[in-house]
Amino acid sequence: MSLQAYKTAAARAESPREMEYRLFGQVTRALVHASTVERSDIQTRIDALDWNRRLWSALATDCSDPDNALANPLRAQIISISLFVNRHSSEIMRGDEDFEPLIDINKMVMQGLSGALEAA
Image (tube, rainbow, N blue to C red; front, top):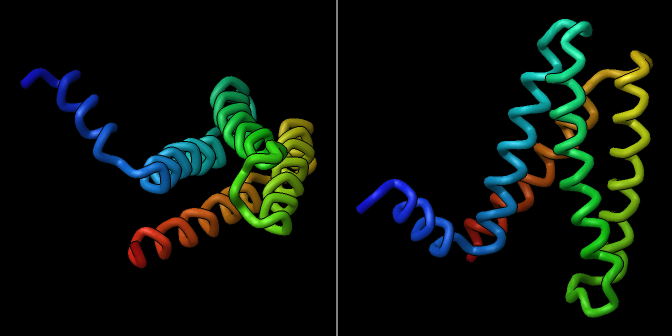
């Protein structure tokens, strides 16, 4: 079996929650790495922040859909976090803040997804 076929089969075997956990893991690792590079390494920092922003923006967009099955308070919290991530990312790029709050938020989400995976 080719590597591509294996990747396709593995992706199909993942539940949406497992995919979300994996994606959060990848994005969070990128943020952790970006937090360790020199401030002059703008590209690494921007790439990680942009990836994280796009992830949270996609979640917020999904939560704004009236057909979303999540409870309204949880949807509102996810949208609120997305707005915070956007603002905080800009503050990091201006040099006013650091990466830790974004990393912590993602790790907390991963813990929640991990608990839900264990319960399933």
